[in-house]
Amino acid sequence: MSAAAVDRLFFAVWPSEAERAAMAAVAARLELGPGIRRVAAEDYHVTVAFVGEVPVARIEALIGIGAASARGPCALAFDAYEYWPKPEVVVAAARQIPANLDRLWRALHERLGAIGCGLDPKRLRPHVTLARGVADDPALPSPPACAWNVTDLCLMRSARGRTTPAYTVVARWPLLDEPASG
Image (cartoon, rainbow, N blue to C red):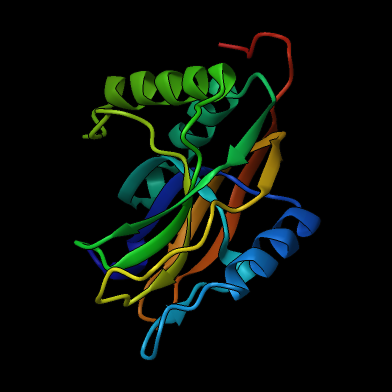
């Protein structure tokens, strides 16, 4: 299969411009040392389900899964910084998972599993990657004071071959209090 026939996709919650700006201001205060790559504010998101490389012909099925799963807005409070040594990243993490976000995560994983997408659904770890290439555990300050109003679910495309990922929205669904269709 040619590279053009495959997209790298994931489901995510995407913040508003104001929420991205607030997170960027918090991230700018982190002293992480030389050689790190700060994630651009326009790329901030919380991955809810990473699907991976998918043939373009299957995108419509993923759009149907997103539409059927989208429900329940919530607030997501980022209350900790974490250093993850294996991927060498610093993240803003949300230690408390809102019930609606957990239900969304479970619905997506159940539906994706039903169409044969091999996911690792051990647990949801809501976080925003702030910096990459962080080789040593930095001294991180007190937790960030950022919250997002999670009001949309997005199916995202990740472009590869760049120094930093470039994301585009494939489809977007509002998270409403009423049950999703399907």
